[in-house]
Length: 192
Figure 1: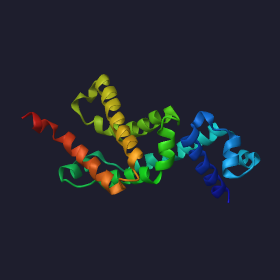
Figure 2: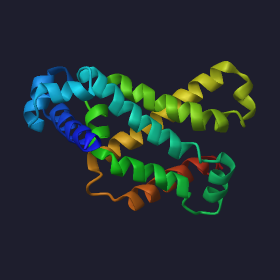
Figure 3: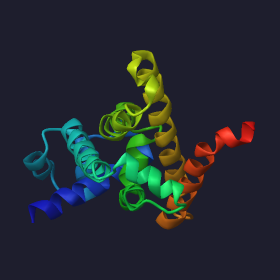
Figure 4: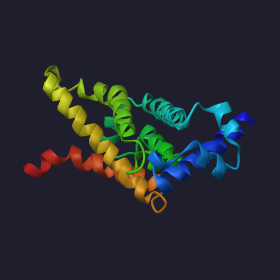
């Protein structure tokens, strides 16, 4: 029953963020929308900030769990073999499953710090392993700017898809992601 109540509160909280923006959401509005009293809300959360923190942490933990199974060499091998890499598909499944809260929190009226938190998860878990394989990785500046470039690109793709994810299923987005990676990997051939 507790989990059901918390899920109900989160659902209405997310809807309010999309409609009014996080800064305009209050515990009173959440309680009214969820058809609960404020006391029930306070049984589960200290305030709207605690609710936002918990929601973000759950999303980040789930995302991190899906990213940690990615093995850069396997991902590159799949790309070389012109195959979709299942852990990448799993990340798009995560985004599809959590499209509403991600769109609300990453949106203009959500929490700007959440984008940085997502970038940190991608960077710490995946990109550091990938970047460290490059000879230029011995230079701190290269690692810093490559990290910024790649995490911004990944987040940009995610945010763009969140705007249209109802029209583009997970499998289609995974295929587009594959095509983007394939294009990037072949840039050198365009120069020749």
